[in-house]
Length: 211
Image (cartoon, rainbow, N blue to C red; front, side):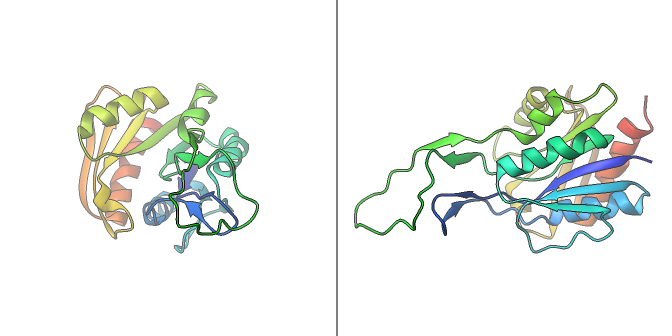
């Protein structure tokens, strides 16, 4: 059995005390993976952005808000784990400057100056031990396989789970699990729990019990 770190849900990057950038990730896939992993006898740590779902069976749940907080929590917990499943959808951009007070409407266009946030999965993968494994998620709108394979290579993922934008905040998913060379090791359409079971079975075959 393995000790698995799962990142889940969205993150928020605040513009001012009440407004923020985020996305439609619900944490449902992360919660399904948590359940599938614990049902399989694995120990699980979840690092979760702001969500309404519950992580049943999780040994530990660490709540964060921003992408930077998710990365910091990952840097604390990943060294204690055998592998990482990066199911979260961290916000990719943050404002250069966060306003101290709520920005008032002026009737004029508002220009936001944004910079990229750190890549959580890529950063953790770059600093992993040789016996640790990493599984990423790719949500693409076009050139699906090419972009997923490119992302797997760039982020140094052992496996990449490809899904579609329709999965965001939905109860169902349509997934493919790819190796870094592009070969497909699993495919499933159905509930997110069904897909999570297929993903975990692939991880066990390829990474936990495999060569």
